[in-house]
Every structure is written in C-alpha cells, then in structure tokens.
Length: 70
Image 1 (cartoon, rainbow, N blue to C red):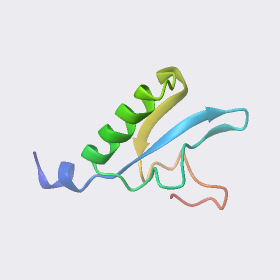
Image 2: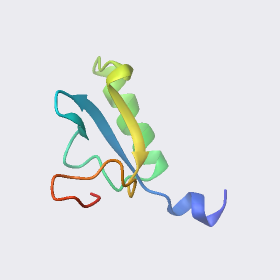
Image 3: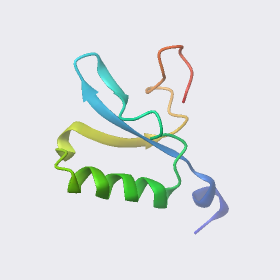
Image 4: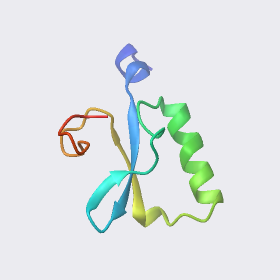
C-alpha cells in the first residue's frame, strides 16, 4: 500500500430527496478501515446498499451546504 493510499480519507453519502448528503455527522474523514466498519454496520442494520455510497472526502461533487468539503 502506498503512502497516498494510507492517507486517503473517505465519507459516506446517502441518497435523499435533496440529492446525496452525508449519512451521519461523523461519517467523514474516515480511513479505509473506518469506512469498512461503517459499511458493515449499515448493512447489519438493514440499510439498502443502493442508497449509500463511499466517496473521497475531498470530492468536489459532494460538498456540504456551505459549498465546502466536509
């Protein structure tokens, strides 16, 4: 695993009537391992995988309401 891969951060988005939004206020700036844990917990809780996705924390397509990345 390269240093780049180790330092990457992710956030988990969910589909809502207003578009894609962060699934939880703590579901951002996650390491890959933390992200995997979130996904496992979501699936165990019965979440439909068609309604959430993982994106890069700094992806400009998924900004918060202030227009900045979480």
